[in-house]
Length: 187
Image (cartoon, rainbow, N blue to C red; front, side, top):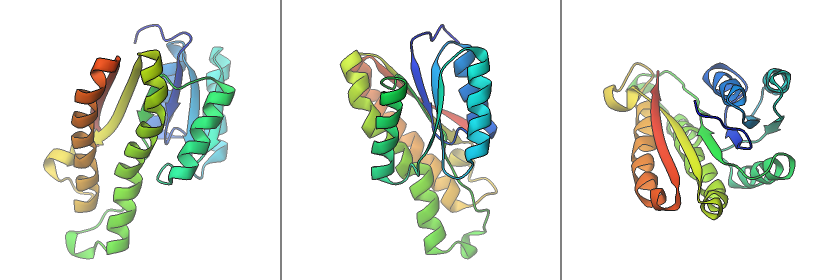
């Protein structure tokens, strides 16, 4: 990873697992990091503790990234405490393993809202600041399930495939502003 000194990163779903590892790696590369969480404050605070031990600034922010008002508030807090977001990692996701015939309409909606709508909402809010700087990096975590269907279920696979489509659209329109958008697959 290149030197990210003086860069500000926001990692959604950053309190554990892949998100926590990404947040810590960004800090090791020199970035100050905002760790978003929805329910796990203690875990987010532990990740922030690891980041500050590295010598970088960190803030944990509770927000439901599938709710536009929460996203706007979260980004305003990041800007107030760390500065404008330079690097966005859209990692927040949920999975309710189900067979196709077992997926309820409510579960379908919840998975697509948390896994896909959140990527749209957070990207939409941070991209203006990135455009002003003529620099930004957006990384969206998808899944091999977007290509294969996977064992989690059709709702999860559809949400992760949607991330890939959104990535293609954003990448082609934002590159001229110095913003790159990539998707990486996770299981």
